Image (cartoon, rainbow over all chains, first blue to last red; front, side, top):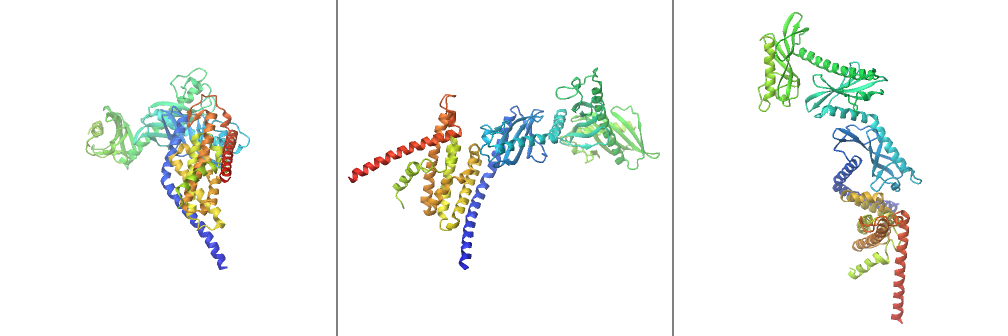
Length: 410
Length: 212
C-alpha cells in the first residue's frame, strides 16, 4: 500500500514539476513578446486594409460593432466612404478557429477576405500566397475550410447591413455638411415626420444640425432625408437616404444630395417629398430654438405667466419680449445678434429687470472657442471681467447687453 | 569529457551518415509541406533546431526525475512548450516567416525527430552531449530541408531566396506542387544511398586490404 502511494506521488510530482517548468518558461516568453505580437498583428491589419482600398486616406473604427464580429473599420478617401473591413473569427474550419479581415464595398460586394490566422492544412486551395480569398469555389477534401470562409464573408456582409452601413452613411453625410465636425449627439423628436435631430459639434461649439425626416409624399413609398441646417435653422442641403422613387435623379447628384433643382414635369411628387422634408426639418430646429428661449425665460423669471413680443427699431435686436406675472411687468428679454465675436456672429437672449439691471445673458448661438471664460454651464453670462486672449467674445457679449438696454430705453 | 574529435564525428553523422530526413526518414510531413521555398525551409530548420536543442537540454537535465512510465507525456509537454515559445518569438520577431510557415510551425510538436531524439538520446545522456545531439540533428534536418527547398524553388519557380535566377516561364511548376515534394525527396534519398553504398564498399575493400 505504502509503496503504491509513493509510486503515484512520484509520478504526479514529476509531471507537476515538468508542467510547472514549461508553464513558467512560457509565461516569461509571453511577457516579452506579447506587445510586439500585438503591434505586428495591427500592422498586418493596416497593410491588408491598404491592399483592399489602395486610395484610402483615412480609416476609422465603428464604435459599437454588431454581435458576431470583432470590429468594423471604415475606409475613406477624404469624405468618401470606400468600403468596410470587417474583422471576425469563426470556429467552422477543419482545424478550428480562423481569423479573417473581410473587405467589402459600401454595398456589401466582396473585395477580398484575408485570412490572418488559421489552422487549416489545405487553405492554399482557396487563398493566394498572401492569404487573400477572392471567392474560389469549393474543392473536394477541403469543404470545411471553404465553409469557414464563405460563412465569414456572409457574416461580414450581414454585419454591415445590420445598421453599421446605415449609421456609417449617416455619419459620413453629417461630416460632408460640417467638415469641422468632431462629434454629434442625438435628440429624439416627438414632431411628426421627424425621426431624430442630430446636433453637430466641434468640441463644445455647435456647428449646426442634421435632421432625419421621413414622409410618404413621394411617388412610391417613404422618403427618408437627412437635412443639414445651420444653428439658426437656415437650410443648407439635404441628402436622400432612402426612397422608392424612380425619377429622383432630376433632383439629386450622384451621391444623393439635393441639387436645388425646381420641380420637373413627371416627377413632381418626388420634388414635394424632398422640399416638404426640408421644411419639416427647418420647423423642427425652429421649434427647438423656441423651446430654448422659453426655458431661458422661465429661469430668468420664475414667476412668469405670459410674455408678449414688441417691435423694436434698435439695430441688432431680433426680438423684444415683455415678461409678465399676471399683469405685473417683471422685466425684459431681448434677443440680440451682432458680428463682434471672435468667430463672427453671436446671438444672445439678454434678461433685464424693469430698471435695466442685468439678470443674465444667455448665448444662443456662437462658434467662439473661449466662451467658457465668461459663461456658466447653462451658457449664461453674469458679468465676468474681460480675459486676456478672449476679448472679442467679451466685447460681443457686453455690446449685446448695451444694445438690449438701449432697446428697452434704460 | 569526450574529445573534440568525437563531437566532429557526430556532426558528419547528423549531416550525412545518419541524417534524420534523408537516412532515418523522420519528419517527412513538415519536410514535404514547407520546402516550396528556400526561406521557408531555412525558417523551419532553424525553428526545429532551436526546439531540438532546448528540449534536448531540459529533458537531459530532468532525466533522473522523470519516471519511465510517464516519460512520453513529459517529453511531449516539454517539446510542445518549447515549440510554443519558438512560435511566439517568431510571431514577435519574424512575423512574415511565421505567417508563411503557418500551421506547420505549431506542428513541429509532432515532428517525430524531436520525440525520437528525446527518447533515444537526451533521456539517456548528460546535458552537454544532449545539447550537441539536438544541434547536430537540427543541422541535419535544416540541411535536408535546404537541399529540397533549393531544388524545388530553383527548378519549380525559377528563383532562389526570392531572387529570380532562371527566366520566368521555364520552370517545372510540378516541383512546387505537393507531388513535386515527393519526387525531389525520393531522388535525393536515392542519391544519398548511392553515395553511402559506394563509400561503404570502398571502406570494406580497404579493410580487406588492411587485414589481408
